[in-house]
Length: 279
Image (cartoon, rainbow, N blue to C red):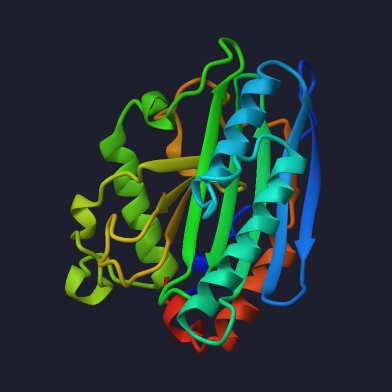
């Protein structure tokens, strides 16, 4: 179902205006469309506010995770991120030419969202990369920072009753796919019965509430793409701390709708849409 495979697609949130100590965040874009390259990489830059340097460093670490030329360049800012993109394009081209007579494609799409309230900051970065592999690389990363201490943390640490959130996630999964309450994994295709569904390792804040990003192989066979389940704050009640967690006051995003169109257009060209829309 397209809803749960909107790779770079879930990042839409509505927030009210922040009142104190908000961060200044600007979006930037790197584009390449020549030769074997199809790149549209939207990325955030935190200009000021508590922990801005730490946030920017972690953002660049995320792009470096899927960097195929780590031995020659490590991105730390826009200039080096552009250098990474350009060298990656050249690397893919040369790699293809050594194996055949055609350059390998280098397709890299990315988008991001940013949410902030009085307690925390949550940044979600989504990336889609293809270098001629049987399956494109899909990565969802979340950075959560405590605004009081300036330290990064895992949202799992704020969940008082994880088993309850898992139940809500299972319920939402059934609702999203129109499955009956007693559906078995034989029908869902998951590796778990929904009653045993674990929390995702990666959780961030989105418009609906807590969004759980299950990577390949986490709760389903590795041939399943990314699975996203969003549990609305209205269902969570007091099971997540701190109080007011859901009252986000500041929000920005970059490239979400445009990247969504690019991803599905690309998958359509590759004949992958049917498979990837399922989850």
